[in-house]
Every structure is written in C-alpha cells, then in structure tokens.
Length: 566
Image (tube, rainbow, N blue to C red; front, side, top):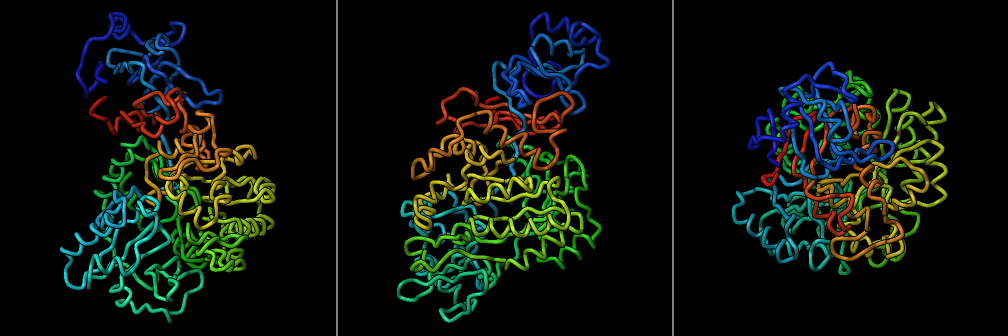
C-alpha cells in the first residue's frame, strides 16, 4: 500500500486531482462546513468494519491527535484533508479495530529449547539432543513453554527415559504451558524426586503401570524442581515482544498474573515513549497476606493507570490445566485412575472464600482461573460470599477459561453479572482433552454459542504461550470449532456470526477492561487503534480466516507494523 500524501513512509505518488484540490483548500466537514482543524491522516477507499453498535461498515475515516475524528464515505472523509494531511488509499482493503487478547502471558519463544515447530517425538528428542551437545557442566536445560503433545504425530508426552536417551547425564526440564514440567531421569535424580516422594496438595507426580516415574510434575509439584532463574526482563525484550504482537494486529493485551516489578517495567516502557501495545495488568500475589503487603501496602490502587498501562485487578487459580481441571465427574481412561481422579483443587474452598472476601473488602476485583465445573462451583461460592458482604455486580469480576460448565451454574453467573475471558485451547489440545475427559466433555469445551445465548459478556484471547499467540487462529476456531489435528469438535458451539467473533477480539475486550469508551471500535473520539488485513474477514470462506495476516497495525494513529507487501 504506497499511495501516500504528506507521509514519511512508502512511495509518494499523486492522488486524484480532486484530492489535490481538497488538500489545497481549508479542510471542510460534512455538508461543506469548515472544520476547525484538518485531520493528520485520512484513510479512504476501504472496507471499514467499525464494530460500532450497529456493526456499520464504512469506506473511510479520519485521524487527528491519535484519535478517530470522523468515519463515513470516502467523499465525506476527504473533506477532512488539509494541506499537510496524509491521504492513504486503502485500495479496497478491509480495516478492523486493533485486536486485543483477554488472557496473554507472553508471546512465546525465548532463550530455552524451542519445541514449537516439533511434530513428532523424534523431532522433540532431536531438539533436546542438539541442546545437550552445547550444555555446560551442571547446566539444567529448560524448554520454552509454547508446545503441546497434541502437535506431535504420536499425540503423547515424552517419557523420562526418552528424554534421558536424548540427553544422557544432562538434566532436562521441558516446560509445557503453565501447569506441567517433564523431567528426564538425570533431572529427577538431581532434585531427589523418587516414587516415594510425597505428593504436595494440589499437585501430581504420575507413575506408569510399572510404578516408575513418568517424569511429569503437575501444578504444585513443580516446586520440587525449581527452574534456573530466567534472564532478567529488560525494556529491549519488552519492545521485542511488542513487535511480535503488533505483527499479529494486536494493540491491547490483558496480562493475567504478574508482579509489581514487572508492572513497573511496563510503566517504564510507557514513559520511554516506546510503548506500541496497551496493557491491562492483573497481579498474582501468593495469598491474602501478600496481597495486603505487596499490592495494597505498596500503594497500588485498583484501576490506576492510563490508556497505556492500567491495573485491572487480582488473578487467582483454583484448579490445574489440561491435566488438572477440577471436575465433578472423574477423568476417563488411564487418566481417571479407575474413576478416582477428578483433577486438582489448588486452593481449598475456605481459603479461597477468605481470599476473595478480603480482596473485595479492600475495594479490588478478582479474576479466577477455573477449567473444570467443580472449579467453577468453587469460584461461584467464593464470589457469592464476597458479594453478600460488598456488592460486586458492577465491578466486572471475571472467570478465566471456564472450559467445562453446567446449566445450573448459569443463573448464578448472571446474578452476579460476571464476565468471562475465553480462549481457543481446544484448537490445539483437542485430542488430548478427548483422552482425558471423553468426547462428550471435550466436544463442549468452552461452549461459546451457549455462553452467548445466556447473554454472558465474553472477551476472547489465546492464553499464549500455552496456545499460539495468533488471534486469527482463535477467530477461526470460534467460527468453526475446527482443531489443528482432529477435526471439528462440538459443531453446535460454533459461532457463525463473523461480527460476533470480531467483537470478542475487539470491543468486548475493551468492555472487559472498562475501556469501551476509548477503544475497541472505529468511532469518532476513540483511540485510533486499527489493523489493515490481508483479506476481507467479513466475506472470505471460513477456512481462510486462519490464514489472515495483518498488513499494517496502527496504535494511536501511529503505524507500528507494516508488512513488506503493504
């Protein structure tokens, strides 16, 4: 896309004579009335999915001082062009509001062993073996977390013996998502983990049929194998992560659980003038005492911040992930341990009740990770008791994930006006969840259509790096319920409306962070965050949605990413 007037990027070419005449005259508003100021830029001849209340589709819009000032037809918007206005011919391209992610820890990748592109146990073992060749004496090899066994041909996990064969005598810890480690025999020995090691509450140390350790440590059991400290986060690393997010059209993310030191770094990034993503921050203190000392005692206030870095509230987890979602029905097959395994409850009910009540009394709000329906029961009881002490209905308390729920829970969710942050875990992990929970439950993981029919406020995301960061993959899955390796799961939960899915990733995220008045749609007065897409999301076949790309991403009217093809 290179038709620019008054711009600093791209090849400058002449536009239509009428455009030149308009630019030479005082800018005029609708109906020919003179405007007080010309726009900094106008974007014309496009297909603009505004995501306003009427789901309007416009041709053009004008931007001034980092905000949208007008939206409408090309003819109308050209009236905002003055002598120094940048005029961008979109050439029919589709534009959507800046995309957002309701639950994003990090973009993935990093300095560890990269397993994201492995597609078999052999691939994975080769990556580990390659890293072991360069290991220093005593070094513990650690992987990045953005992989899952569902991406492997065998659709199973590597064993401790297989990892040992790949890296004999070198301690290896594969980190997968946020809930599991997988150790080789050398690492198990290094940390003194044996079949006789006591299993900590809220954790698991699985053994195989012969009674030997598989190498897996789940949830609280991960504490038995403390990882080497990661490289310190720097502003340069934050900038690199932002660049990756912007390449996917992401302009806002909600970080579900961090600490005060990281929060201060996001503020430093903002203050340096180098922020290209807007951050909504959730803290994750260890317990109520830590909340009172490190957060409240540190002088941080609920909701403080601005449009770049803002405090959302507190994050808590009450169950595990794929292997540990807390259910009212036992897991199936081998994972069910003869009908005795129901997942992991990581916080006792009484402790959770006290925790959220204390947070509520302090004037803060809560978002809770709950995968299984028993975990949702725990969340609802704690929320209801907190609500009885101090009304939470207008505060935007949230359930994160809500994989498995029951109809009897829905009136309780509605009664407290709870929000839901939902992601596309099924897209990657479907065959594994089928093995753990059976097809009936797996097919209804994150039942978005049902949630929409209930009138819940839903905001979409990915849970990256647990699931790849690509928002277009999430949108494709929400539209089709298709999965990477095992076909469609729960076709009855597909959301056929393109507009509804786009809202999940734009305006609904702004509602989740209480910023719908300033972002999330292309409307006059809102922050000019928008994305030019590689194809028309509104009309292409559903199968092509997963192949969409951002051609250009703008934050506050400033271009922060441009593909070479634009």
